[in-house]
Structure formats: C-alpha cells, structure tokens
Length: 261
Image 1 (cartoon, rainbow, N blue to C red):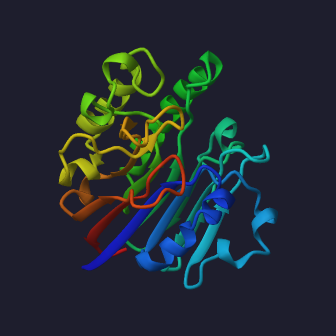
Image 2 (cartoon, rainbow, N blue to C red):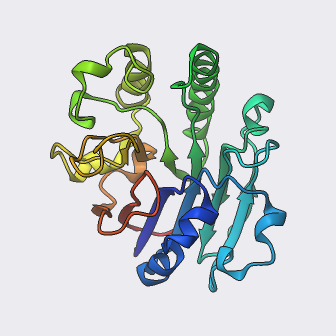
Image 3 (cartoon, rainbow, N blue to C red):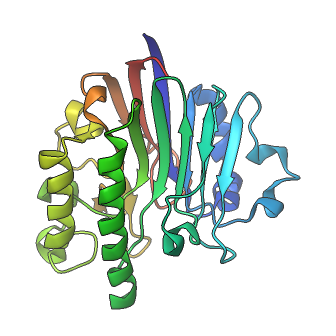
C-alpha cells in the first residue's frame, strides 16, 4: 500500500485561481491526484499556457458547451488506464460536470454538482441531476474498482456542516430533500463521507459567500467532499482544509489515503 494524496478544489475560474497563486501552491503539495471544479474556461483558452498543464501530471479537462461556465479537470501523476468524460446524461454532460480517471484498483472522479441557489429552474435541474446521479452511484458499486468522488456536491449534509443552519432550512444546499438524498447515499448505499471518518469537529467549512464578512467570520458551508465506495473505508490517513491562502470562494480539501491506485 502506498500513501496517496488527493486534492479537490472548486477554483471558481481556473484562470482567476492561477492569478491568485494556486499552481504555485499545488507544486508544493506533491499530490498524486488533483481534482478541480468550475474551471470556467475552454481548453483552447488554456492549451498554450503550460501553467494549466503542470509538469509531471497527466492532465484532463472537460468543458461546458457554454463559455465561461462550469467545467472540471483532473491532474494525475499516474497515467490513467481510461478517462471518461461524460456521465451519460446529455443535460449535464453539456455543462461539463463529470470527469473520471480509472487506475488499476481505484477510480477518481472530479464532480461539479449543480447549484439551485439561483432559483426554481436550476433547483429542478439539481433534483434531476440528483436522481440520475444516484443511479450512477449505484452502478459504480457493481464495478471491480473502488471509487473516490471528489468535488463540489453543493449540499451540506448536517447541521454541523454549515454555520447558519437554522436560517438555511429552506435554502438550496440544505433543503430536506437534498439532505435526505445524502442520507440515502451514506446509510443505504454505504458510501463514505471520508472527511467525517477522520474529523468530526464543527466549523469545518469549505465554502464561504463573498458577501459580507463570511470568510473573516468563518460563516461557511461544508459542501466539498471526498465520497468513496465502502472498500475505501479505513484507508484515509489524514484530512486538511487549506485556509492559509485564498484561491477561490472554496478552500482546497486534501486527504491522504493508504491504498494502491
């Protein structure tokens, strides 16, 4: 078994995060796999700048059809056996929300789940995504590999996972239906919230609104996860939410595993 470090970050624009020093920071992390969400760029906007293709990594990008919107990426030191760029649901594949890299024993996914915070139309899209993705997650468990799905799931699971939980019971990201969906994933389907296997403390947030003093006062939400198939349980060695620098409205979530990719 090797020690494998996997980092997940919603960059809220990969070019913006680059200007804020994210690639300088990443170069020091010696991560085996880096999952990025919300790249907000097309590959032709990045291809001629080596900063977006870090040395020593196999780099994959999936773009949304709409320019400046969504998009995911994965950087891996290990060459994937296979790269899958679609979930298989056209509505969401057009938005660039799913990227999977497969290795010998394990597959890693970079996921950017929809937000419903802009209104009912997007909330209904989010519910459609949740229904389709639950079926996909069930199918992953029947495969020979273990899976780690990293990314911005856009749902805070429990009251401990956001500061103002009382005031957000009717808001997207903390709706009863969304939380029950995660209950099903963890309790019935036996997926693992890897961070919570290691850290059960409160005020462990990964996203802060840009409004007011949310960052300064740590008024945040934990909506970024590593969620893994049951065989990964017990493999996590350490977890970290990096807050010393700010590259995005999300913080990088790093987890070290003892496993063979």
